[in-house]
Image (tube, rainbow, N blue to C red; front, side, top):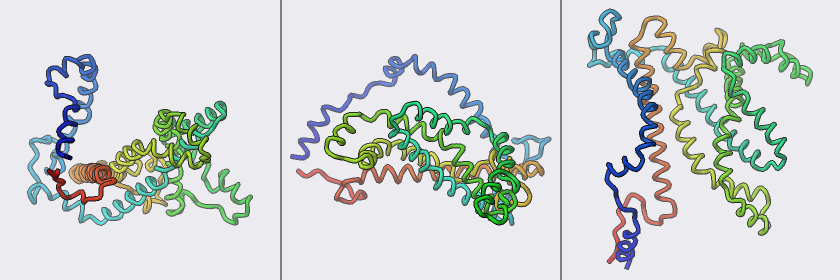
Length: 330
């Protein structure tokens, strides 16, 4: 019986069309993609040729292709990188800062979007949106200078804290722990409003009749958010989370480079700043190897998390094991 139902349902599946017909149907859109594809090839894929430096003893006069291959089958620079004394410290700092930003910064835009969605006053809502969006449009060169003045030992933040009873000012730019949380907090603040835009767009597609039906049934505002708003944006949340995992070793070069100093070097040196120092010292091979390692780890996180979420979606609600093959009974 199940087999016959499956056969009958296959009649309603869309028919396959040839590649030429699809191209003819969407040729205008495909032509519009050409400039973007060219830019992608020139600025994203063409520079990948430089990754060969990680596997060679690079000589500037000989060029990339003319330089000899490194020892250990081209892996000598990777071995030197992993065995370096600073690598573990740099990797630890990068992972700690990245995960703290992910843990603190990922749910913040979701909460803000849900709160903005519940606001009924349009004027007040637009004011809040503008104030939260504004920091995103300032570069860290500007923000770094402002934050150094605001969080200085004689700055307004410490003055307020001392007024509230704090005995000694907090050296935000002179203490490793304080600087770490300053980095995380300011990164969340800077990306809060901009990150909420995508969730606001997803919430705008919710059918208002669902809220009206829930209100008639006696559901509170909290229950409407929990059972209507959140499930609606879960697909968007999953996609954004997977994309953020791809940046797991990207602790924010612009921010840290414009805010750190010698006093907090131990907790603020990350892969990006360490790679810049290697390139400035002329160690191009190890710097390139470090960048390649970072990219491969990010790609592994994206592919792995995507596979896990797909498996979870496929297995959701199934009683049988997802790993077993399901045979249709006669």
